[in-house]
Image 1 (cartoon, rainbow, N blue to C red):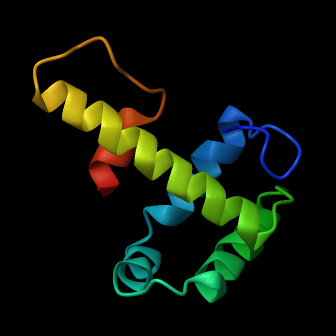
Image 2 (tube, one colour):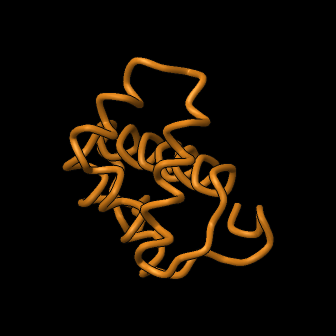
Length: 96
């Protein structure tokens, strides 16, 4: 999962992505759309302000992977399993 787009996302990069993602405006835009290239271009531009160089595709891929991982951990927890966890679960739980 992590090597799409070349280099691994650092913890700080993922935190920055989540911080931008948690913006109500971004969330509302993402909710209503499938064609979201423009939104991820905005996300990438905002990451640049933090000095993080990612293109919109990398941002979208990471977003999708985080969301997918979150959902599988969440459903494992809902079914009573505590064996699955992920690094940014609480941050994503607050958003999703």
